[in-house]
Image 1 (cartoon, rainbow, N blue to C red):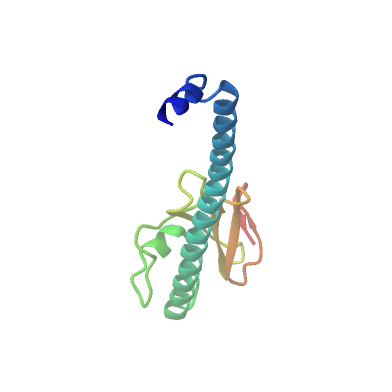
Image 2 (image 1 turned 45 degrees about the vertical axis):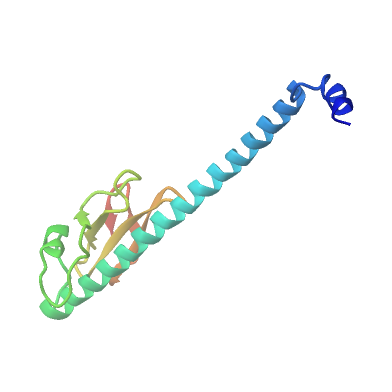
Length: 149
């Protein structure tokens, strides 16, 4: 019985090149799908983090208004505010638009032109654009210029 098995096995030494190529192609397709799915999940997570930071900063600007009867005149005033609310740890405010390189830790704050509100810009990693959150009477953010009205 063993002798017959060895004769049958004698002609088949391993996998054929076609079988190996099929396995390699399938593994490549699965890897590509995984990489695309992972990058989408990462972009959504980074956007959610930036949105949360912007919403928390919005609350700080509103607290500043409640304490001082006016909105902060610049990002540095809001960054250094130590009243009833504080900017989240690790978040930096600036007057220029955040980018994909610093969008998870950097926000843009601009007072509006009428000085009765402001715009908080955060980087949306899903759309690759700066999006605004508004405080007071502000209704529009142009991150390119940058201006807040």
